[in-house]
Image 1 (cartoon, helix red, strand yellow):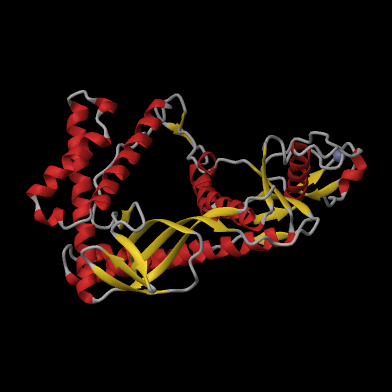
Image 2 (tube, helix red, strand yellow):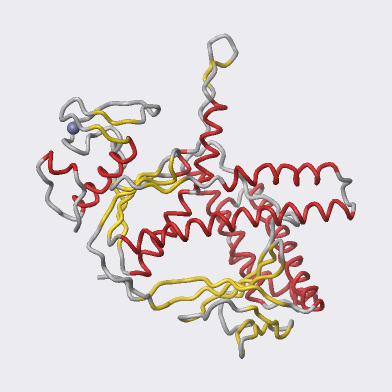
Length: 406
Ligand SMILES: [Zn+2]
């Protein structure tokens, strides 16, 4: 049964007046200060041995006193301040989870500098933030004009204001957004994620790897150098920082756009799409240094792997798969995560396991004679596994050579 509604976030650009912009910046500034002060308090508690027991609710209880003592905090909606503490709590919980699972670098929550804290949230629509005749009405700030690009559907739950490189945006997180089903096509496929191509389908079709980041990398590097050349605190440096942020934003947008288009094309064409359940974080982890027994280190292929890591990050698999899953849910199609073991080793024609290293690009089966591009062979195996998960009976070996419809 396809879902009938989904959650969705709409982001639209705001057109604040200069006075409103200053007001938004002031709220952001105070939220960041509160975050850092609350973090300091947690660190103190931690040192005194309170550990995990220091909770967000203890800190929330203190908000009232803060608001009484500091009128600038009284001027901020209480939900916005509560959300700041909730965010800190979230990063803390994640930190404790990483500690508990024994990760080498647990990464203690850190203080948020000016360039790292970008947004604040009204956690309940209608309470401090609401829409009125196409404008965003914020308590104590006023009516802010919105540059709408599409209609908002569903029920608005939260409102987040964010300061991006090119201005202020509002994000409306909506529940119960009705889905617009796409007509079934009777086709299904498996997709193999790779470094040679962004993805390979079971019918052998490929989507090329976008090298947005690589192309933009030189530009980013130039912008970065410009920042470091200029004197700290100078006007010119601030300008350079702004330019750098804009370029990062550009790269991000290009990538997201590519993901959306690729995902949409897949859900239009196929009713079911199977993919390997890969943890991108594991894929891109740096190789361990390998001691050579003489106090030094053997060459472990780190620099080559670093290039590989880059490509994987480039491809941004995790974010693509979540966009794909989301688009499929919206369209009434399905995605199937399958076990990735041996998808590129097994023969999609007869099932024999043909061991090959990562550099071998062609699958040659010594059992049934099937010769096929490595990634296409994997994509077929991924499709078969997706079908097996749903109880579609396996076919006699040779018949498996052509992917079948539903
Ligand atoms: Zn074979």
